[in-house]
Structure formats: structure tokens, C-alpha cells
Amino acid sequence: MSADLAKLIESGSLFMGIWDTVWMTLLSSLIGYVVGLPLGVLLYSTDKSGLKPIPWLNKILGFIVNIFRSMPFIILMVAMLPVARFIVGTGIGNKAMVVMLVIASAPYISRMVESSLKEIDGGVIEAARSMGASDLEIIVKVLLPEAKPSLVIGAVISTVTVLGYAAMAATIGGTGLGQIAIVYGHNRHNEDIIWICVLLTLIIVQVIQEAGMTYAKKTDKRIAQRK
Image 1 (cartoon, helix red, strand yellow):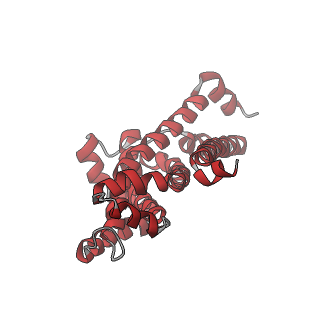
Image 2 (cartoon, helix red, strand yellow):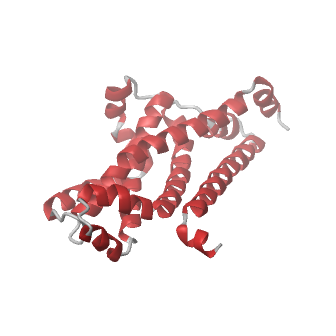
Image 3 (cartoon, one colour):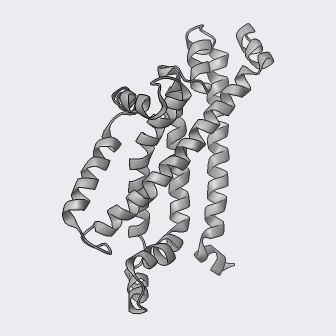
């Protein structure tokens, strides 16, 4: 164990790095879903085979979403610095990083949501229509409940993706395991610190995946029916 690693553990900086990584990831994913879920529903609904086809609106939304999805995150961070300054008053630090993560994750989540909704059998929607359900009722009472397992799995994948982005927080003055790996590991040639950060990140990923997949299985009607 290197002296730097011992100091990080003794001072609690390593545990603080874990906490910073976790809260940035979860908060960004939550806000990203708050933005991405309705956007995904709108993309699905306005598609040519959706509840209320509006081709021109669907194309505009799809074009904007695709731009943000295709942009490498490191470039997106630099481009969105003015946006972060406008929203949280600073372009550096964890607050700015959360803004960047939300901007990066929301378009990604919207496509995941759209894909989940398109998996639903059209017969279910027609049955709801035949009973006089409005488009809003179909979305709230039919589409989202039916797609819940798929949406949960999508949320897990999105959260793990955001966790990977959060490791870049150090590039804009943020903290977390990424910052520890760069500042105390790479810059000071402490390979043990780098690998400790890698191991801790993998553990966080596994916890998120196990928790998410377990919940997804509990919400899957098909699994419940087999039991």
C-alpha cells in the first residue's frame, strides 16, 4: 500500500470520493429520467405508428435527441459549460457536472423509453381505445405499467452509463473516484490507487445492476404468472 493510499483512507477522502460518485450518478440519473421519460413518451406518441402521429414534431425532436446522443461526452461538457453557468452559477465542480450528466443522459433515456413503449403489443392499446380511454389514460394506465419491467432495465443501463460519465468529473474540477484516480493515481504514478478506484467503480456498477434487475423481475407479470 502506497503512502498516498494510506492517507486517502485515513483522512476519509476515499470514502468521500465513493459518496460523491454515487450521489452525482443517482441524482443525475433521476433528473435525467424526469426529463427523458416524458420526452420518450412524446417521441413514441408522435411517431407514424404512435397514438397521435405528428411527423414534423417527431422529426424535430428526433433530430435534437440524436445530436446530443451522438456527441462524445467530453466534447458535450465543453460545449455545455455556458448552460451550466446559467443554471447553477458555475462551470466547474460537482454542481456543473450534474448539469452535464443530465444533458447527456436525458436524450439517451428518451430513446430507451421510446424503445420500451414500442415493444408493447398493439392489441393492448386497441383494447383500451375500444373501452373509450383517452390518449393520456392509455399512456398512464396502459403503456407505462405494461412497459415497467423494460423501463426499469433501461433505467439500470442508463444509470451505469451515467456512472461512467461521472468518472470524468475531474476534468472540470469535480470530485469522486475519477478525480482520485487521476490526481492521486495517474499524476503521482500510484497504480494501486488507480486499481482501487477501478475496483470500487465495478462494485458500484454491480450493486446498481443487481438492485435494478431484481426489481425489474418483481414487476414482470410474465415471471409472476410462471410462479
